[in-house]
Image (cartoon, rainbow, N blue to C red; front, side, top):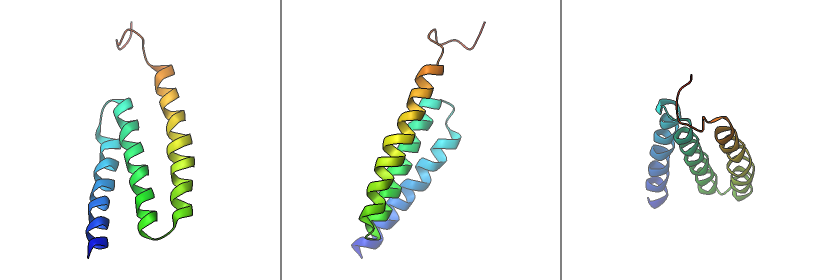
Length: 85
């Protein structure tokens, strides 16, 4: 019973954060929602007793891809905060 409630909680969290990725206007907040979605997928792997896949999910996707997205957002941001000239 507790596993089903945990799965339901993290399934709702995964869907909510995935919707946040595509519905939020700010790119930085979208990247943070993507990190939350990827971490919750790692929890799903742990619930399936696939600890190696959960570790790979965290190391490769959260640790690698999300850091690259964060660097891309920081490097392409306008320092003045304006839209353009």
